[in-house]
Length: 365
Ligand SMILES: Nc1nc2c(ncn2[C@@H]2O[C@H](COP(=O)(O)OP(=O)(O)OP(=O)(O)O)[C@@H](O)[C@H]2O)c(=O)[nH]1
Ligand SMILES: [Mg+2]
Ligand SMILES: [Zn+2]
Image 1 (cartoon, protein in one colour):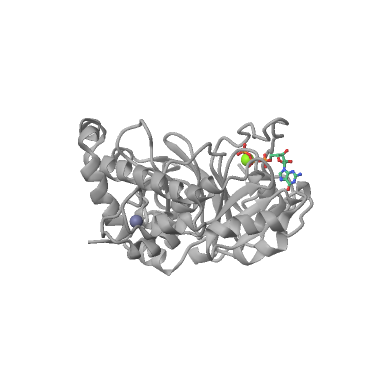
Image 2 (cartoon, protein in one colour; image 1 turned 90 degrees about the vertical axis):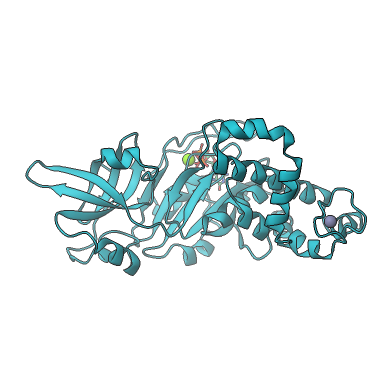
């Protein structure tokens, strides 16, 4: 098992032993009387998980009842273990309430959103100063992160390779509103101290972004030693080779928790209405001034958004990005409501449905 998991003292108070534990968890867990233990999921394999428990790191199976239920343990979950010392077996029997939940739409695999990880306080959206940088992709990540309930922070990594970091940072800031944008180099460690305020004891941070942007290298930099394997990027397009294949939780020496994720090609959004609203708050606010309440900002007269685009106040690409995500949202939320098959049938008479959903998330009557 990973030797990075050192337990901190022998205090029987769970707070000191299950990183991230808090009062709400203590109170939810107090419903369990008897041979139960709290734990936190480090990694999930098919039906077995690596778990951080009060004095140890263990593996445990997931109970049959839980496996059959719609609630599945994911990395970062606080769970309840049934401890049977007489047989030496421990089994995951419940999942304690989640504070935040990182999800994505699951194209082509049934009707559900896929939960990737839970109980994350801050998500570092990592991009690298080079060919990875793509504002439209950042908008997509921001949408997903806002919807998760975690706080987004954008990391512009590999600034040691960039000529003009400040222009790139300004470009990113033009689409991110109040979200912090932090230029760093995981390799030279330049700028890394700006991440300290997010790496607090009992707080959980997750790293997401394309393969090769340096997520695992950042994790290693937090540890100041090599914990995770990293891999070179291709020279021509700077793409990574999907070095990290398993999502995993790590405990830093100072007691903060970091989740390293495999690289994502393009994250599908799930039921992310709120995330879209926050990511595109400029557009959503300006839309109040459109002449028609149900304006789709495509070609209606009196459209405040089209006007802003023609005046160069909102880039056309940003509006397109908003429209595209809104359309995906319609599809996703309908799909989770009524299941995949029926939606396939309904897709063709969908225009009015789309307009309705669209109005719903822009908050218009
Ligand atoms: N020059 C430079 N190279 C970096 C930096 N951070 C990471 N790299 C390099 O980028 C390559 C990819 O880094 P990884 O940490 O494996 O990337 P990753 O995001 O974890 O990739 P996946 O696990 O495939 O998702 C490696 O060769 C790293 O050494 C940096 O700040 N500067
Ligand atoms: Mg990696
Ligand atoms: Zn409009």
